[in-house]
Amino acid sequence: MNIRRKRKLSPIDASILFVGCIVALSMSERVHATDEEDSYTDIVYLTNGDRITGNIKELDRGKLRLRTRTMDTIYINWVNIQSIESDKYQRIAKTDGSFVYGRLQQSERLGELAVVDDGEVVDVPVEKIATLRALRVNESLWARLEGDIKAGADYKKATDILNVNVASNIRLREQAYEIGFGFDWNETQRTDGNDASRAQLFGDYTRLKDNRWFWKASGTLERNDELGLKLRTLASGSVGRYLLQTSTVRWEINGGVAANAEEDVNNTQVVSAEGLASSSFDVFILSVPVTRLTAAVNLFPSITEKGRFRSNANLTLRHEFVPDLFLDLQVYNTYDSRPAEGSQKRDYGIITSIGATF
Image (cartoon, rainbow, N blue to C red; front, side):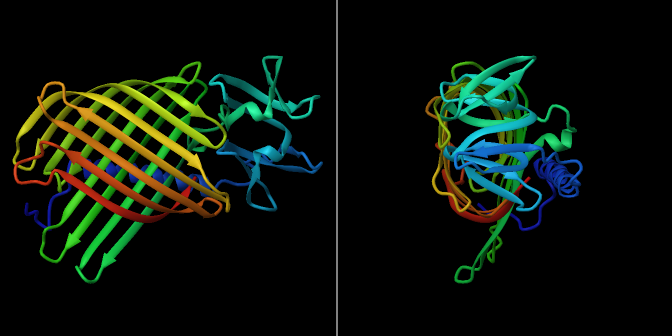
């Protein structure tokens, strides 16, 4: 399949650029935030008798991320924490799948957090807590957004192939739900003019339920030149559950249905219904300060197109070499049993990139 080197900016490209501008503005707002806007009033009591004052960001994968005035951002092993005081409204996910909401105060009993909400106090054992996140209910929308942005470039002189990738994920967390959106843009340039582009713009809404259950609605715009896909618009709904949700491991599965409208490079348009089965596994490995491994797979067996099957899988290893800066190594594989005529059934590759969290 030959693809011209010069092509007009497509709607999905324009959308990705728009989201990229939002990300840049968000990061600019966060970077230029003053110390007065950050509340360094949280107190972390350690099992050895020490205490540290700062601004709690989150507990995830066995580490409490704490921003301080004098030591920048530090990570504290959760097993070394005795208690916490914080005036920020927190969402606490327990290992049994239930949630507790409120502000934290030092408990009278060792090894427990006292969670205060509307005058009621609930003591939660530290070892029963999987994640802890401040909901920032009194802050602006920009301050409540969190996420990452990354970019990478790979060049092979032997084949004279240049590969450039830019991606970002942004998430807004509220008491009972989460909203996420982002993009992933990959461009490959070859000397023979057979350039290729792979791009996604996506968003999702996740409603959290009791006992580790959730339901999700999501939408995706996608293009993949290697598979002969000019534009795919995908909308899906699913129900899922966290099979494992601890301070170091998270494993979820979900299933549902999707509506797929696509146009290929031959200008053939197809509208179809598909099943959806997906799973993701996220594990904390080491801490220097943070290393994580994430694996995800999505399966789309067609309901209305007999014999068609699509899938995509990603494996990402991320190492945060200094606070808020990381290196990514990603392996991806996309498959379509019935691509456009003259196109490949499979697209796969390895992407290395450097990025920042905000």
